[in-house]
Image (cartoon, rainbow, N blue to C red; front, top):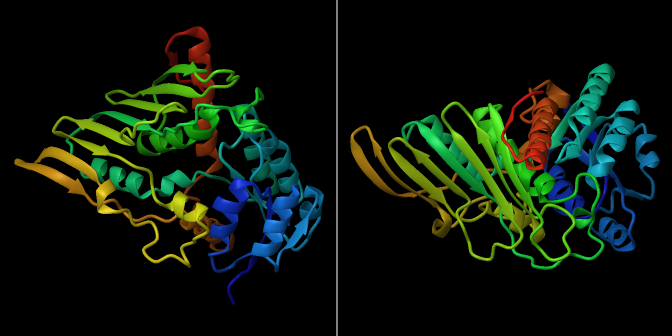
Length: 354
């Protein structure tokens, strides 16, 4: 008989409603039995969408529930450390939404605690499972561009005003788009090339009244590769998601992975056919010399699935499968953010150190 892992979800805002509950409930063997929701509209949504789950008012009700095996934390970033620590101390396996923590000190504390308690600890870096990122990895792996020397990765939005009562735009630890969007871009860079030699950053507050970073450029320096990551809140024109340059050619990709919009529309991999399939209009373009042949044209985006993250979590707990996203990897993303902040403060390139 297959093992059933019972899940408690802490937080039912956008993260819990869009990125966690709909995906983890598609995985055979994961059962959502408890949801901590704090606002009236969130309580109503949780009851309507997941009537078999208990909707509770406090995190302690989840931590003290002996039935709960796995706790998923989807809260403001500043709460990740105390909630993850409490869950581990209660003997639960833990998934923390990205970014893992505010500091590497906090991340190291949680990693040590998970090892002490012999519990799984991982971080929801779902952009590892973007179809265009999977395609990019294959292009690099197979040498279609020769030796890659430069990558520019962007994640832009346009909102020229501040959201009222939005914690991400409040002057508090872990707020701003470097922690939000930047953690996605940094995780992808580290997944491709590992730890860099050095970090250079330019962090800005561009919107009127902004108290937190709402525009950044972070450059990771490798032996041969320059990996530039950019994001802004005042980018109205559609710019390339990826621009990749190699000794034999280039690859350019516009548009974001389609899974987020499908999830926001209330769809899941179980209710939408062709899940994760991009339209041809957003496929990337390649212009390269490969094995002596000049090749130009579209590259069909790969099909990926954010639910594979939770499938891996289930198999890691039930079958000892290696984690695809380790806490140590997520910790390194936080280290890059710390070095980027130091680079901005000192206006210089910072050598990578742990």
